[in-house]
Amino acid sequence: MDGSPALNPANGFVDELRSALPASCAALFICSDPDQPSLTYGFAEDMAGSFGEIGVTFTAAEVLERENQDLCGELVDRADLIFLVGGHVPTQNGFFQEIGLRERLQGWDGVAVGVSAGSMNAAEVVYAQPEEPGEAIDPEYRRFLPGLGLTRHNIVPHYNQDKDWTLDGLRLYEDITYADSMGRQFYALVDGSYILGQDGREELWGEACLIENGTLTQLSRENEIIAL
Image (cartoon, rainbow, N blue to C red; front, side, top):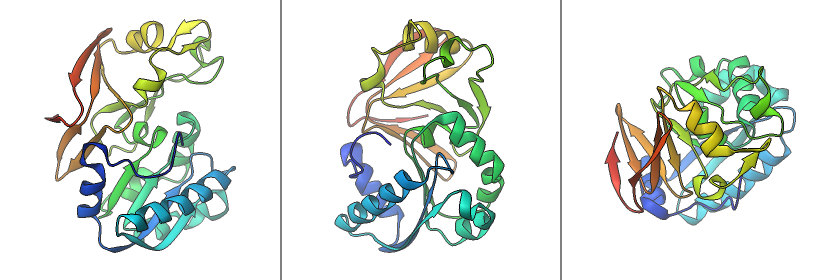
């Protein structure tokens, strides 16, 4: 969960979110690390305030963590809005698989928002870009994982922040992510950009680059909308 929890109005995000939600709704925040839920509780509290500022009131702001994971089905069913929060992609992915979240979301009729790692785990097949020391050079580290299937596209968030990072002596993008893109497509989004999916259609809103077969191409600019 990087940066401020305040909602970013760039590229029409707040307007689209407000139009998709009722004025009063129940929210569910799913932990990225179920054994360390404190950050998610804080995020939920901040978000309740941020949504109130745009005219959406939370009737509930529940957190799905280790202590209540057996209630996953009930919590999902009564939520109008689900947040897949940020964190460590493989840790979050493991929890999603443990609680059978993909199956729980089948037939659920609500709005899901992926934040950082949550947006990455929303894919059909997740690209878990290495991020912690040792992961880039660990032959046992799994870079591709089963995801929630909420989007057909692989999102790599925070490109504007991370594009010059190095990890384990390697350049995060040029040496790691470009190589992993052979035969695949990754959408590198700058903060404030997002993929909007509804009724089987997906659109890219805002600035992003496409990483495919080891090459990065500028795909869109701020305030542009591209059908995917």
